[in-house]
Length: 171
Image (cartoon, rainbow, N blue to C red; front, top):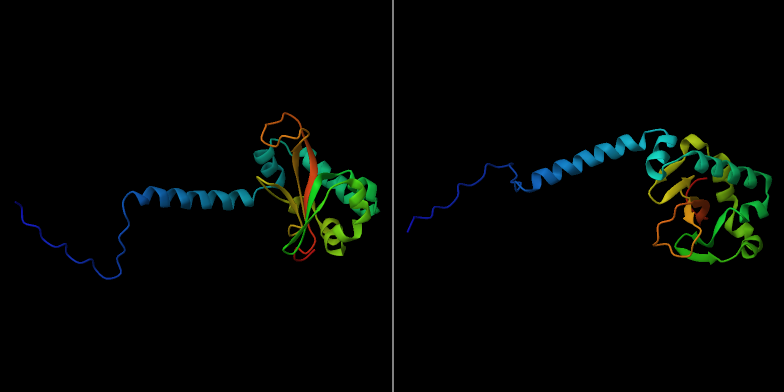
């Protein structure tokens, strides 16, 4: 039987990385570098990469901003996907219909949300796989399927507001 010898101790300060982890760590670093580059690209390119288009998303943003500036509550209510999730800090409420939104308009579109919408410039929009964010998350909008089944892919999406965060910072 061969003689087993203890391994020599590693020099101080040297960390052992299992060889199978090296490609994983390298891939993670590359992904982080790619994400940084993607965040700096123009919003039109970002939307094209995420949603396959940008014109309709930017037009929706401008329509929403114009309606909020005019205080056209009925127009705003028509730009919402119902039921709408409304967050006030950790508290979540749901607005189920346009009529309910009109009754609760000042609660949902409070001064913080209105400031965020009116101050937002199209070039400073943020987009990811969840949709497009205004301000610091005061409003999220995205393409939604007209059908009831969210698990079935749809050919034509309608862009609507999907979430309002009334206590998002800033604005």
